[in-house]
Image 1 (tube, rainbow, N blue to C red):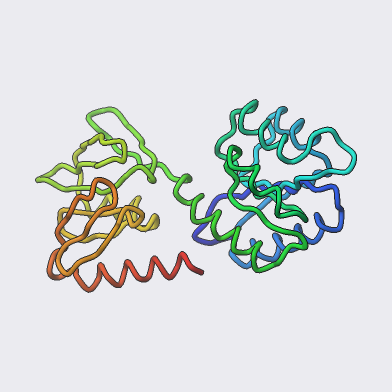
Image 2 (image 1 turned 180 degrees about the horizontal axis):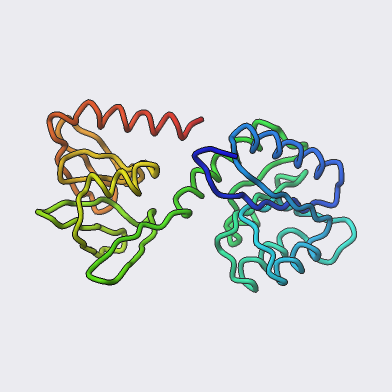
Length: 252
């Protein structure tokens, strides 16, 4: 399957109501197919079964987890705590589902991606998937570069912007570090960053869309540290068009 998202989404549904599980699986198949996303979906009917599989090494990117189970000792809240605390898995996104809104206030420490009320609404499930994909794309990529004879990598999401000075490219990272290597900004952008929504704003600057706080007439304000970078005159139109195109794309 071809598309902008070239990874496989591993999802799990854990709900003892077989009708709910089947309907949710059908919705996910339709949504992920429409978004051109490869996927694998596993179904569980008890929290114990899900946790046992994860303890044995099963990997999931996204879990739809019921809160109340009729005939098992572990409810969804307890399963979520096991995943976060015992298995120390902070990367999997958990979406809680329930007939009762009252449970939503007890889930903060599990850091769920979302909470959905039953009966599940297709449009809301689709929005959850789109929200997940917006976040997941930030976690999915590594940027690699060579310094001397050594090869290094950093996560795409941690790059605020890149700066070109003479023959060097400087990475400005979210933790305050600066890494540099020899290369051209244009080649770096085309080869590794364009598909991750980095915008060429100046011959000397490429910026991560996710760190843009404001675009002014001839300068760009970053949300991280409130730094201000110049926008070159001949790129003003392209910068705005690229920004709006990315914004619209992420709404779809």
